[in-house]
Image 1 (cartoon, rainbow, N blue to C red):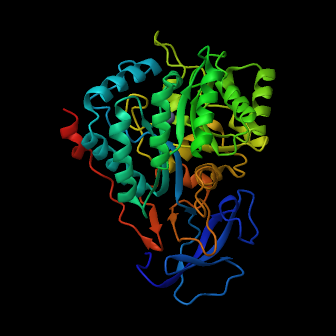
Image 2: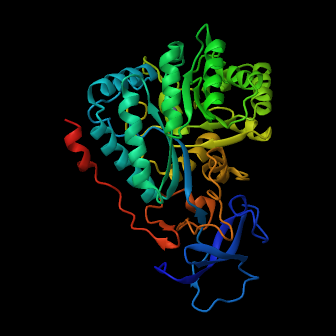
Amino acid sequence: MIPTSGSYCLANVRLHRSLTPGLAAAFDSDGFALANITITNGKIADLAAHDQAEAHPGAIDLAGRIVMPCFVDCHTHIDKGHIWPRKPNPDGTFMGALNATGADRTTRWSAEDVARRMDFSLRSAYAHGTKAMRTHLDSVPPQEEISWPVFETMREKWRGRIELQAACLLGIEGVRDKAWFERLAKRVAAAKGMLGVVTYMVPDLEELLDKVFAQAIEHGLDLDFHADETDDVAAISLKKIAEASLWNGFEGNILVGHCCSLARQPDLEVLDTLDKVAKARLAVVSLPMCNLYLQDRRSDHTTPRWRGVTLLHEMKARGIKVAVASDNTRDPFYAYGDLDMLEVYRMATRILHFDHPVGDWPKAVAATPAEVMRLDGAGTLAVGGSADFIVFRGRSWTELLSRPESDRIVVRDGRAIERQLPDYAELDELMV
Ligand SMILES: [Zn+2]
């Protein structure tokens, strides 16, 4: 259906206002307008309202199908991905996940093992329509010496298909070993990565955060935290990160993931935290599928009572940048998942109520994470930009989000890619 080269026009496509900032058109109450897209040599040459566009000879009429820019997935763990068959989570709890993953990492994560699972994950994400991704890399010694070189090789291999970024991942206590942490920061800087830690309420949290900010400032690194992935109301490390950013005068980008406990805290505490998060210009990414899976998991076989996600609506209302992302895939932190950002958006719509109205929530899987990741031109459709987009069957939100859209067409640089999902059997020999 999509030509393989040259210049062509896709007529009568349905575009969303939040993802096409330059399009002058009358958008309906769902935020959609019918438009024509002209593609020349892999770029978007023109974007015009369907009823105002001149008829293009030979235009391909898409009869109102939704077209979205390729996805940006800003929080994943492709170093952990797909270990489930050899290391399942015994009880579905957060502690079960932490222990199982740690045991697997120390015994199984050779460079070859990590590389093969990463490549599998990237092929899945690419086939689903993702064009940029950030992964965290477990960087507890000696894993940092294994995984960072693998990441650098993988980033080169995938350049032009998936723009790959990485952040180191370690518990905040790891920062206490000053010499080692400084070496890690230097290694991350050499790989042009992001400095990341997991924060929780240790007595010296403020002091340790200062050390993290000092290293980020020294090496000019952006920051990426896992914070408060718990239902414990006493977990306020999101606020501590915002405070540390303000008193350190940090000017880089900061992305904070999870922030689950915020949804359990009293209103006054929440308001104080949100004020500081906005002032410090933190961006927040919610991981709705993983949170639903791990949070409120009960050992007595009773039913979970909350969804686990953070206060995304309240954050967005204050102008805080918000995103949703995949997080874990088929590992002890989440038994399912395939790095399909349409699935993430569909689940987020249901778990977080990204609907009635939809407003500009679609930016949370495209334009906003692109901004946080400093990717110019990703996550929107604009004249002069790369023709990287997804053509869906759905013509409305209810059609788009009711089916898996397994037959979506992914176009990269103007050409439809071959959408081949890797076969699970490829990983069988790593699972024995
Ligand atoms: Zn994560």
